[in-house]
Image: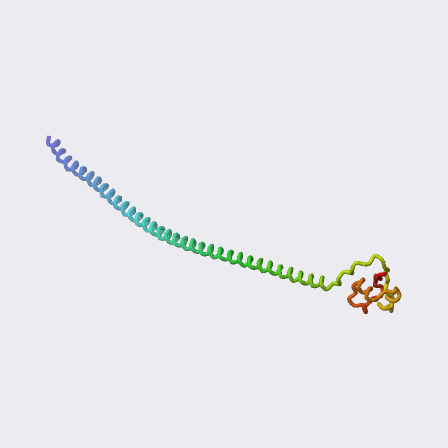
Length: 181
């Protein structure tokens, strides 16, 4: 039975060696898993830091965009106010031009009315109502008012009055005169 004991003696260190080898494998696996976990944690921490930096940059960009938007809104309001002022100025100018044009029209109408009145005053007055009886005479070449009056045996003043003559010495050939009886 020595051999049985010898086997047990041999098997025991072998079993211990195998057990120790198995422990080393589990310990190594745990160390590797721990190393992987640390590596993963470091990688995730780096990713979180990178994302935080990116988020901060986006926040800065967003704030800049808000600032620019407010500047644009203010510029738009200023331009809108200027446009409203320009439109109001144009409307005032147009109103002034219309008023001036209307005043000019009225001045022209007044001037034309005055000229027309002056022209009407300058026209010879209509002949006095003709006497019912008389003659019509057409002035011939070389005839004078005195000769015509003598031919009809009337006064030259009666012919002047009946025809409303302004200048009795300015008779024209072909002019028609009414000769009262």
